Image (tube, rainbow, N blue to C red; front, side, top):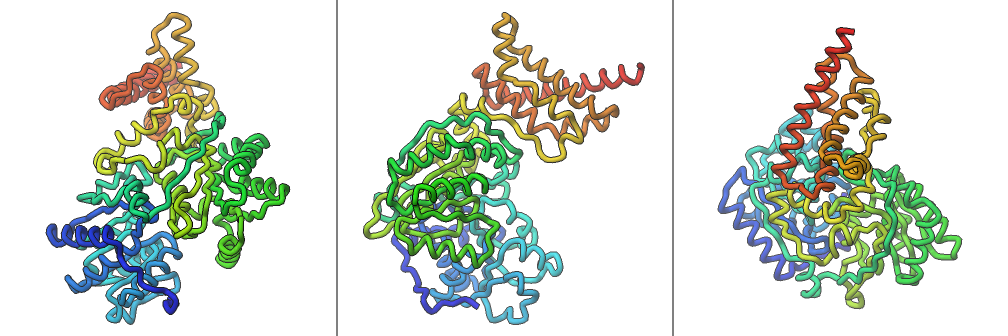
Length: 506
């Protein structure tokens, strides 16, 4: 049961009302089975907008609306907003096993995993749905639900229309993107607080890239958990933000706990929060943070969505990320505007501003939606030195398929420059890389079909190596890289076949 007594309906701002009308017009013009994606920066009021879209849709088309979220806090927040504007709704939580009162509610809110479980048992669990609204649509967990509503409209909303999985672009499922107000426009209109950015050079040598494309937690813990990085964090806080209500984002729990310990020793009011906390403990920490002057909250992977504390005055990125979405989510936690808060401070300790540009910069989201690979490549290739410091981290259990230690001993950058220093062609580095891959595979397998399967599993690693090579030679056009990948894979297969034939003959 949702407590709505103290929840007052938010009146739409002019730009929000204009957006609602645009969305309704698109749905009206394109009919059913049309999927629309809507982008709006964090703090722009996405919940208010899509709740009003739901209200108008129910009124105009007399069909049910299903709203999908990935966090219970977002479900409750949405339910309260819908109740406040007069829309009866029901949250499908883990306790809801059936919908005997289905006719009473024109709108349902569900966490994606819970609903997926119900739909697997009964594909008509929520029947008569005309519109599916997906909050935080960049997450890929929602895709499994779409098959059950193939004839309905789908409206995805997100601050960053980039898929959390680069191999599953959003334009596969959405027909069109509507771009809302820009960050700078919302600042100038008085809807968002402006960010004053402070950057500190940090040495990120030792970070590794995981299979999701971002820096791994384990390598981040090593880099950010050391004494010097803790001292740099403390120095930055005392130089820029002392006395501010401050939110610190970390990559790993051990780092955050060290941050808490370091700040406590200096007498600062600080508490740690991560995803392992119970609901009760989490609420206790957030209540303390809200009502404590000069409070500092150090956190890990829990406050990037569904968290709204307008009194935050400083955001500290005590981590590095290669995710533009995460970058905007973290900074957005400080952008809530209050009568006495026109600005907030951003302290970057991860070279993130250098990687992505300042938070207020214009971003061509239409380009990101249409050509996500090109868009991300152009942004992540700007700082070559950083890229070369980053290593690839193999997924779990890969060592069972291939000698990962042997593969890790090969550095494309070092081998390339070694070839150049010796007066040899740089292309020799690719040949030597291919030999390294071949030997690494042969050490674990003696069957060609099995070896081919290992090549398929190594595609991310091969791609990583060849991207480093194209950076070395300053030639990274998409066509050239595609040619390089195809040639490399073909030659790797040929090399393995010859090596395995030799083994059999021996």
